[in-house]
Image 1 (cartoon, rainbow, N blue to C red):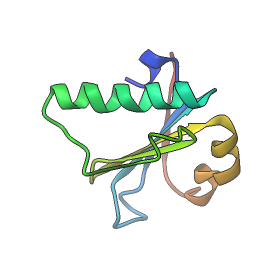
Image 2 (cartoon, rainbow, N blue to C red):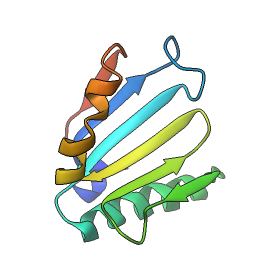
Image 3 (cartoon, helix red, strand yellow):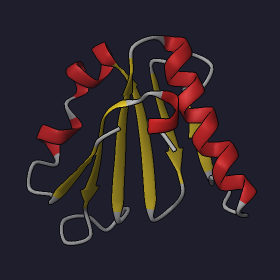
Length: 102
């Protein structure tokens, strides 16, 4: 879904063995605030179509870092500069990862 809005650096992180808060992170990057918002809104809309609704959404209006919480999966859609700054991949460096290409 994120790739349909031209998201870059799409990465799934498997946190099942290292966190009790959630099972997976999905990270994606947009090059502008507008693109970040479009990626996040598309994910939310597409999952709603199949009956999956987020428990919580943060940052959608700003478009710098949107967090979409689906309990077992937390989606992080970052602006390029925010992703570089927060470096979630480094913070959760022990997690197995899978990258997605367009």
